[in-house]
Length: 95
Image 1 (cartoon, helix red, strand yellow):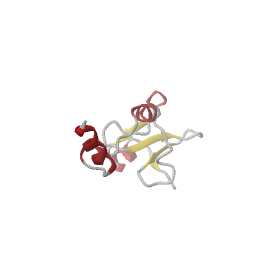
Image 2 (cartoon, helix red, strand yellow):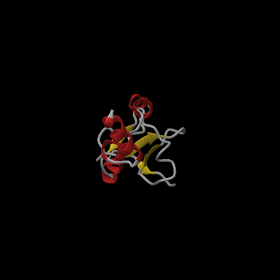
Image 3 (cartoon, helix red, strand yellow):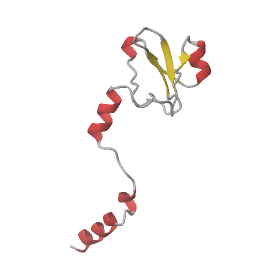
């Protein structure tokens, strides 16, 4: 069919629907369950408990931000601002 050829041309040239990159749903769910993606994009500061029990928050761009997961059942949480994290008793990560 002519439509099939048209769709292949569009896909090869990254046009229309094919111009955006979509994350694999299984990867998205796996990442979400580990607490690495904020539920609200405006609240992307990660409040994490360190292995020594210290409350530390991480902001995007810091060394361990991407690998830090949030486990709400351990008292960890997301913050919308650094001021909010400090007022709640968390300190900024040093790296």
